Length: 460
Ligand SMILES: NC(=O)c1ccc[n+]([C@@H]2O[C@H](COP(=O)([O-])OP(=O)(O)OC[C@H]3O[C@@H](n4cnc5c(N)ncnc54)[C@H](O)[C@@H]3O)[C@@H](O)[C@H]2O)c1
Image 1 (cartoon, rainbow, N blue to C red):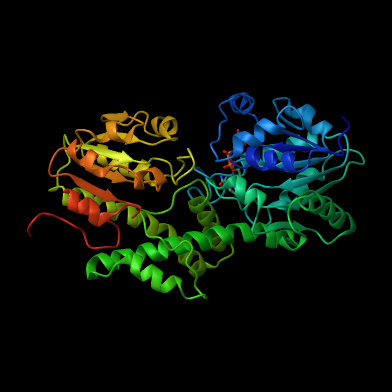
Image 2: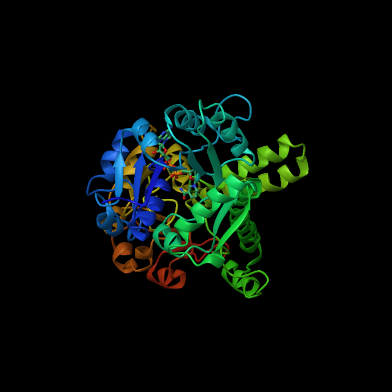
């Protein structure tokens, strides 16, 4: 079959894989190839056991793979072959040199730019899908401009707003698609080309355009605003615990104001995931770089409150369990950073597990999708860790349950059955406020929610 467009995506991760699967599904007359420097990732995308768990993704991959969606290892050849190139490589926080622990590490991104420049034999549209510091497109253009001959590159910014756990529905019905371009003749032509792809399934009024710098910055700002809401409600949860106010009641009353809205107002142990922290720190670094110290400090406080919330939660476990965890068995329910994903990057569960192990507790981790990643995250850490998928088996013989991920299945557990199998007094720390606290208290648990009075059978 002759395809109308030949599209390449460099980077087969949590964004590259799902976003290209949706383009392939919605545009059967386009050929989409996804490449990666990590051959194991490509093998996994070509297997029955995809490297990314997202509800609904396996069905879409099955429908398109081998027809118009391909996962390949020959990066150089694919750069030559394709006309439109999405770049979706990782842009983690820098761990060395200037800007360490703050700035984005652009080494993977720059290598990609150089590869595109080196192996291209015809003009191309290059699209930034990775989240990048504002003005990165300028650097991309400078590298690509050194290509030999008459080859021209148009660089567009098209940040990805999907969230893990709901990637397929977010990609199928996005709130908006943002495309940043230059206002030049060729910039506008490239923009029209990309709009043409999204318009196959996204209503035109949801496809918005801007200059490149606004587009790059919007992604960082969107993540900063989301994380800021989480830190705002979490900061108030600390005050609730001191004053007998209930964070769920406060959040409901505040969120019903239509100017505020009720989304992202759920108190918990804090945000995780590969993006929020790194993108805010990137924003903080940019503000400092441009001499805006007050603005930098404002956004940095969002990350600080997130860390404070996890420290507070851990201190509460230790204090409530008579200030010693040595030799006690603690069952962690949920290790992924949120429900419906196996991704554990920056998951609060990593911090909590490390702290529990440092207190010489024995940690039993249960999660329906994240045990493989959990074992990688905790490899080499001193102490006893067990990984048991079945929550009933995991909890048996434990002194405490610690809920760290908002998986639906934890709401439906038979807590009476679990309680019967645990050491007494049995403790339950609900880091996501997802279970029925009163019911569990009535069963016999000492229950410690977030931002609400504890329900304890101990007399003060
Ligand atoms: N994960 C999310 O929910 C999410 C959402 C929106 C935006 N983003 C952004 O999208 C980008 C990618 O994120 P991710 O979660 O998919 O990362 P990821 O680590 O899952 O995937 C990135 C992939 O790029 C590959 N790679 C690195 N350098 C390469 C090169 N030179 N050539 C080919 N492949 C290369 C890596 O091997 C890896 O498989 C980041 O900038 C991130 O901030 C992520």
